[in-house]
Amino acid sequence: MSLFAAPAQPPSKLGRYRLLSPNAGVHVSPLQLGGVSVGDQWDDIGMGTNSKEDSFKLLDAFFDNGGNFIDTPIFSAQDGTSETFIGEWAEKRGIRDQLFIATKYSLNYTTRNPSIQQKILYSGTNAKALNVSLNQSLKNLRTTYIDLLYVHFWDFDTSVEEVMRLCIPLFFKEKFFILESLMHPLGSLLKLTSMLVTTFTRSQLPRRMECVGPSFERDIIPMARDQGMALAPWNILAGGKLRSDAEEEMRRQTGENGRTYVSPSWERNDTEKAMSRALEKVAKEVGANHITSGNCHCVFDAKDNLRFPIVGGRRVEQLLANVEALDISLTVDQVEYLESIVDFDPGFPHAMIGNGLEYPDLITTSGYIDRVSAPQPIKPVAN
Image 1: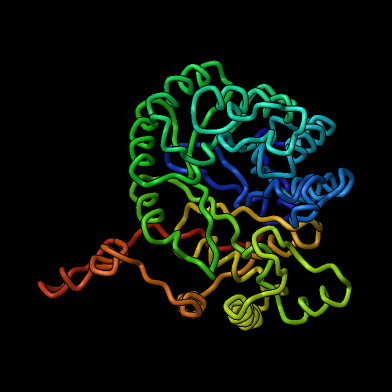
Image 2: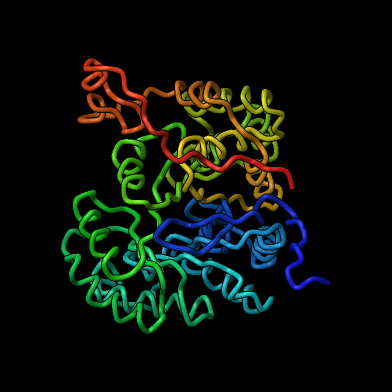
């Protein structure tokens, strides 16, 4: 066998890896497995549950199909059982260094733990909360390092400088390698980003994004494009509510229902039904087996080349339905059709100056300009 023989073809398109960002040279699977689908402590709050056995099956399916990018927050993932299950699974299989694991700090992971009398020091963006949360995540995940650490939310009391004073020594101690933020006001986010680029790497921003609520596109996407940052869209299936009429009826008949974490009703509203039917129409046009594939692809790479959607589902078949998105390609007309289902107001100043991909009328009235194209998304390729 040649020393430089080509590797075996990957079992799925999850095994065709991509550069995380121009500022982070690691190569990861194009979809992330969302840790909220792993764990068994949130059934009582309407988020569903996955036993350890079923969680391991889901993790096995993701990894064995080529996936290596796993996202899990210490708080908002089954009261920490997501991290502990992932850590035990990775240790059992001996694959920790083959995985790229992201976790988060700042949300209080002791909220539902009655043995913790005073909980205030576990919450916030401050250095104390970062230290205790990171140490707990390392313990839960049975690892010595975190690949990607997020500031889960910005508390408005902590300074960017305080965060950086602790992060820099932790970085050099190899406790984590990449720092980024999730729910963050744009002003302090830009300040954090400017400091990251001069100290250590910045990579990607996770943001809530779905076809039924595309506010992600106002400021975050243009900023990420300008700063060379990747995007990690989450909630891309609207909490599981983007589904066909037939599936909704099946859930009603079997009693499976759906998540009630955000809304007391697991059934779709009129907007979600309209979006689901549009996705079903496009799925039939491209020969996809699941309507979720169309939405995953639309969010995935319809416009940008650095998006790594977080996908979930408690069952293996739900995960594999999302992976199908890597095999399809939507036309510009199909993307525009899906985006037309829900009205979107870009707000000021974007309604006047655009999003940077095309010249606004403020410029085109002065003459004709041939614009350099923005980087294009990676298109599906045959194995």
